[in-house]
Image (cartoon, rainbow, N blue to C red; front, side, top):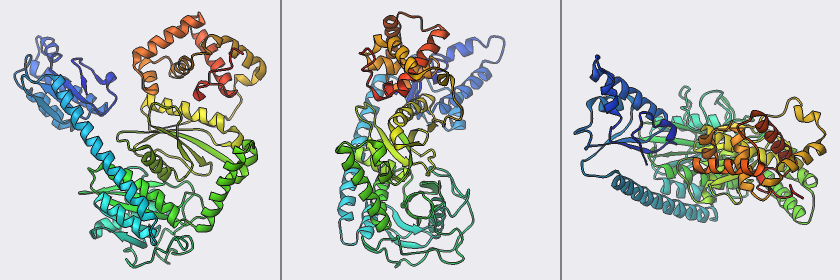
Length: 537
C-alpha cells in the first residue's frame, strides 16, 4: 500500500503496491493548460501517469472520490484500460486508512492459507517419498496438492509416469517441448523461468505404463531416447534447470531432475496447474527436489553423498577447506546468494525450490539475516541464469579455499541486484590486475585497518558505507539493497562521517574509503561477513 498525491510517485514504489490517490495533483494539470485544451492536457498527463505506474510495477491504482473529485475522471479510466492497470474506485466517506487495513487483513489471511497449504503439501510429499514406490507416490501427492496434472518425462518426451486429470493433446505436446528445453534437446526453443516455449509439434509421449522403477533402479540406467525422436536425452551442460509455458487456463512448469552437467541423463518433472495459483510453484519445487533424490543415478548420488559427508566430517575434525575440496566432486565452485521475490514460503520450501532451480543440494539459509535469503554452492561448470521468483547475486568461480571471499562477493552482488531491481547480478572474474596490485598487501591492509578503526565496533555502519559507496551514494538504492528506510541510511552515513571525521561528499575521500573497504574485504574482514572486528587490534 502506498498513498501519494505526487505527480510522479514512481521513485517511491518498490513494485506490487496498491497506489492510492485522491487526484489532488490533477488540478495543477488543468490549471496549467490556460489557453489550451484542458481536457486534452489532462488526458495526456493521465496516460503518462498510468504508463509510469505500470512500469514501476504497481499492482493497481485506487482513486478516492471526494473531497476533490465527484467521480473518477473518464480519461483516467481510459488510460488505465489502455495500459492494463487495474483501477479501483474508493467511495466517498471511505478513508484510505480503512482501505489499507482491509487490504493488509486480506493479504495476511491469504498468506496464512498459503503457508498452511504449503506445509500440508510438504508433509504429504515427504510421506509419499518414504513409500515402497516413492516416485509414483510423489507424483500422485503432488497432483492432489497442486490440483493439476503431473508427469515425469525424458528429454525426448517419453513419459515415465503421471498422475492427475488427463490433459488435452495440446497440453501434452507443450509438456514434451518443455522437457526438451530443460533436458537440452531444444536449442533456443524456449526460455528458462517464464519464457514461452516455441517449436513445432513433436511425436506423442510414450506409454503411460512405462515403469518408474524403485528407489534402487531409478532412471539412471533405465530409459533412453528412442531413435528418431530428435533432441536426445543428454542434458546440455549449462542448460536451464526450469522452464515455463502458458496455455489458456493452464500454467506449465518443468524442472530438470538430474543436474546440468554433461554426460548425465536428463529427466524433467512437468506440472500443469492453474496459472493463478502461486503456491503450486513452491510445492512443485519441493517435489522436484524429492524426485531428484529418488530417480537420480544411484551410484552417482551415493558417491556424491558419501563425498559430502566425508568432507563435512573432516571439516568438523579440523581439516582445512583446501584439504577437503577434492571430496566435493568439483575443483571450482560458484557461490549464489538468493532472495525470494513476491510470494515466500517456509524456509524449508524456499531452500527446496532454490535447490531445484539451481540443480544443487548445497543450499542453506543466510545466517543472521533479517530477510528471507539463502546461499548455495554450485559447481563451476553449471551455468547460472536468472530464475523466476528469485533475485540472485553470483560470485565468480573459485577453488574451495577461496569460498569465503566468494561468499562476500555474492552477498555484494545480491545487494546490487536488489538495489537495481535486477533479477541477477554476477561478479565478473578479474581479467587484469587493478591498482591494488601496485600496493603491498600488508601495507594496504594496515592502512585500511587504521583508516576504518573508528567503525570497528559498528558492523552496520561498515555494511551501509560499503553498499552506499558501491551504489554511487544513492540513498534509495542503498535502502532497497539493505531493506531499511532511506532515512536510516542517511543517519548511518552521517554517523559514519562523524566517526571518521571526514567529508563523504569529497570524491577523493570516497575513493580512499572504497579502497580501504576492498582491502579488508579481500583479507576476510569485510562487511559481508559482518565481522567488523579485529580492525583496531
